[in-house]
Image (cartoon, rainbow, N blue to C red; front, side, top):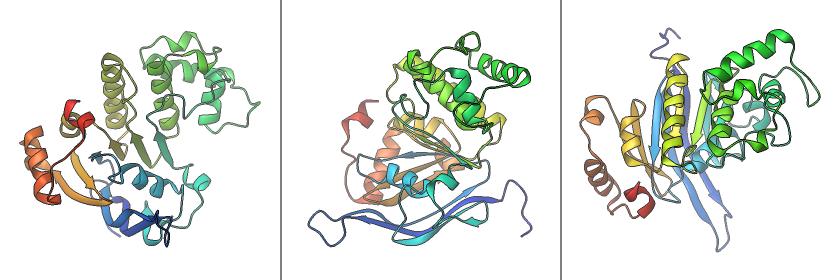
Length: 270
């Protein structure tokens, strides 16, 4: 396939479907015939009300469950039936909860050793690796480079989320998934972590999908915005069209595409 890096498809979902509790009164269609193509280096923001299928989409990509139908292709490899632990080697993910994604009882250094894939639980970093870790931590601008022996559980939410972002991108994953990774932080810290996110993604040309509850952020960050509803992608915009949109325009686009108003106070007030 003769493609330039700018045109290469890094992630492809074709007709992906997932129903939880099928055949029971609790049956719920979480993903309904989702097709999505993501180019290498593309940064996509994803928005939608609670239950729209955003996190389920991420779980399908990561292999938290196998989809009922369709296929998922990552960097040319069909990963549809690949176990989650194998996908984790090439997919980085951050969650809303700063407590996830790192081991609280282990030191910053020990967490970084694990993230770098340099050994098991009892492995330690050599002098060269320690200096490389300190240099990377200094870029976070949170003073963590001088606290490498401190347990991660003692860090603030913002510090821990910044560290987790560094851990998720330490080995340069093929795909970075951000699942409302600043939603639990105070506004000032969230802004700092978002700025750090944008910097790391841009400098390393990472392919990134970011779920956000903030509609303005969905338009400001990245290069493409997707809206989901009831397991569908109902709106997908990029380029000049996206650049000209306001939050009010986005709400109207959602109404036109889904036939209903977006009813989610958390999103509208963000």
